[in-house]
Image (tube, rainbow, N blue to C red; front, side, top):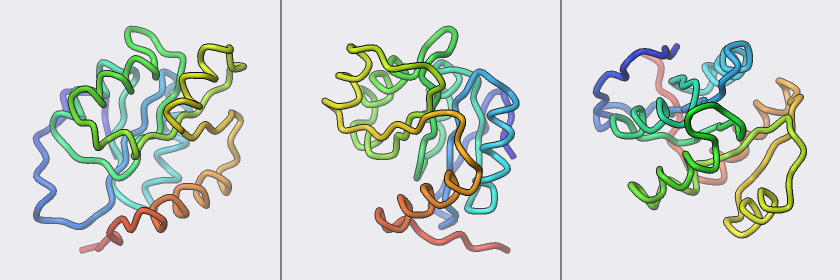
Length: 145
């Protein structure tokens, strides 16, 4: 599973495993989501947008599951910074939030056509949603050694 340490360099050219980045300031949520997604591919974890940007600079992700409200750099700020560096990464984002949407946040998601899941998210629903997204995107199937 992932860690909150400095991310290692990752060269995905040698593997076709799916890769996920979970970004949430709640360690229990990170671990729960990691447990669900680890059955579908490799998982890295970040506690906020700053840590997540460090991961993005070292690895490519099939899906990024990001909380909205986080310290240092929130989910919207993380999205904007990530897309500024890698425009193609926008399609990998899925937001998860426990807070009610403000009008400005709703506009942010709507204008960018970003999917938003609302906490609490059932484990079975998360797994099905992610699998559907991967299938629709044609992400490679995980190859276990």
